[in-house]
Image (cartoon, rainbow, N blue to C red; front, side):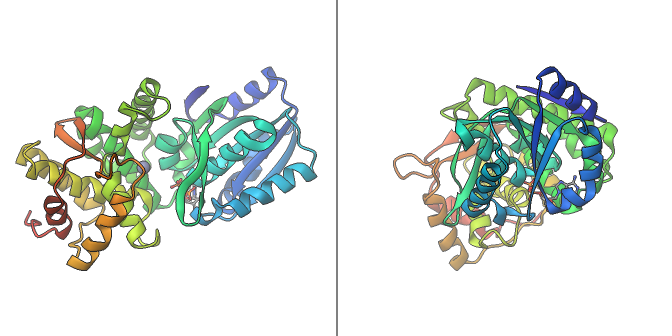
Length: 348
Ligand code: ADP
Ligand code: ZN
């Protein structure tokens, strides 16, 4: 398991395939990546037998139906354990390609080339793979670690702006849970990130990957400290679900979640007002806060109560307790959650 970050990495891919004596490569990608980069990718792997499976872009493809069609295709093409599966795309492609790789014939070797900012800094690290079922995100899945992960920053040049915001949500989260200096560095370089300035993106992607690897390394199977990665996600998930995953994408919802959860921390006296205001100023520019109505709040809270991270029916929250520090809480009063979501405090 190796993560390589930089530019022009396809040479590394060739040397990996050569030294591991790979003959066949089965690429899973989506339509967008296929039209943007497939010629370029194929040029670098001419020497191998290459198969491609192209899915429709978007979360809707992370389904059991898509998975079954890929199994059919693998069987139809006599793909065996000597073949390596390659996920080439964003988080959706990575999750489904990794899941197929982990299950087909009890596991095929797997390489990933994440192309979205979110996938590069978050979903490609940590081995979680899976699909959605009955409207439940990642309800079927496993832990499966790729042989190699190639993070090529140039791909970000074609990434839609909204997807940059999405990745930024998780990047800012890393700073707030683990490294306050990093939070400040990212905050003061937001414009350059949106300009796809690779000199700025390189250290940011590297540090994000390092933080996630460090946390995951201490708790591979999500039993303890790894849970701090859920900062912003208790409320974030409920907001995504409130709109049936149609209004906000994951990273945008996480940005909102961080804002509301930081307010809860301030209200509980865990952090200073000045720190809360600093967080608010940076994040509110990326995704403006909403003031939820009483009716919406009454729908959001039950969604949080069903979160699989809860214990004994108590909603689990990761809350900031100081600059670059967070902790787990199970005792947040419903009244504070409601106040936070109603956003009547927005007077900055
Ligand atoms: P995420 O990576 O945010 O989990 P997706 O896999 O759905 O989610 O990717 C988000 C969108 O960005 C998809 O429409 C995907 O096709 C597109 N995409 C991913 N990487 C790139 C890229 N490098 N250039 C252009 N579009 C991309
Ligand atoms: Zn997330």
